Length: 409
Image (cartoon, rainbow, N blue to C red; front, top):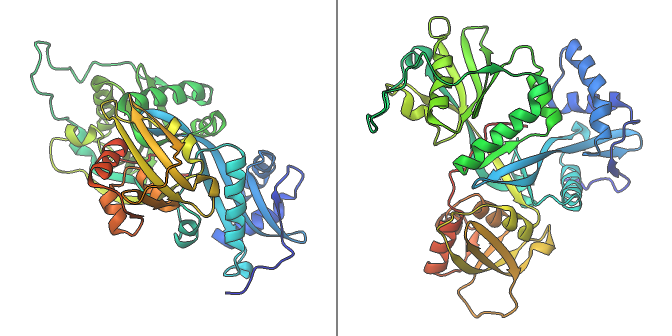
C-alpha cells in the first residue's frame, strides 16, 4: 500500500465550499444518481456542509476523501446516550489503498471526541478500517417479511383477566402525522424505548425527522402511546413498515391490524422490528421470517461518560476492575473500576496494580461488551483476556442486552 500524500489538507467543510466537487466525489465513490436527484443533492449540500459535521480531505482544491456524522441519541437499557452516527465515508478512487481513509476516520474520531460524544456507531461497507480504530460489531437491523394475509386476523390474547378480549374494530385513535409533528414523534419513540428498556435504537434530530415525515410516499400515524409509519413497496405490490412502535399492547395490536387491513391488496409486508417485537407473538402461523440482516458497529469514545449515561438492570449490583488498552483514544486506557447499582453505572480510575484477575479489553472488546456481548464470546474472539468467573458473570449480567436498530443512516 502506497503512503498517503503528505500535503493533503483535512478540515471541516463550510457552507461556502463548492458543492459540485463534493457531489462528484460521492458519485465516484458510490455511483451516479439520476439528474433530478443530483439537482436535489446539489441544493441540499450547502446546508449539510454548514452543519460543521462533514470532514473533507483536499489535494489542493480537489476533494480526495470525506466523512461525516449525524447528531443522534442511542437508547441503552431505556436511557438515551449522545451518539455520533458516522456516515458518508468515501475516498476518491485514485486515493484508495494509500491510507487516506484511515487519516480521515482518525480525524473524524478526534472531532467526535472534541464535540463530547460518548459513543459512535456506523454501518460498515467494509470492517477492517473501522476495527483498526476501535469500532466493533454490536448489533443488527433486521427486515422481517410476512404474507399480508397472515396479518388479516391476529392471534388472540390469552384469557387472563375478566375483561373481554379486545375488539379489533375498536382501539386507540390513529391520527395522521406530518413534518410539523417531528417533535411529537421523537418524544413518542422516546417513551417507547424507555418503557421497553431497549438497547440500540436511535433517535434522530428534529430536522431529520421532519424531512422523513415530509416524504409524500410515507404514511405516518401517531397514537396515544405509539407511532406507525409505512409505505408502498415493490411497485405497490407490498407494504414496507418502517416503524410500528408502541408502549401498550392494544396500540401494538391496533397498528398491526391497520397494516393487516391491506391484506386484500398487498401480497407481502416487510417490516423493521426488534428481536422482542410483539409481532412475532401476534402472527397466527409461522409465516414471519427475517428477510435481511444488516450489522452495525459501535465505538466507545469516552468510556467514563458512556458508562455514566447508559442504563443497567435495576436488580444488578456489581463492582469489577477492568484494564482497557485503547490506542486510538488513550484517555480510555488504564485500570478502571466499574460499579453498577440501582440501574446506573460509573467507571472510575483504579490505582492499585493487581497481580491477576483483571479482565483486559481493547477498544473493540469494550465496545462489544457495552453492547451486551458475553465475556466468554469476547475471550473466544480474542477481544478479552483475564478476568475471574465471578467478575465475568457480573459483567454479563450488567451489560446483558438484545441489541438492535430500526434505522440506517
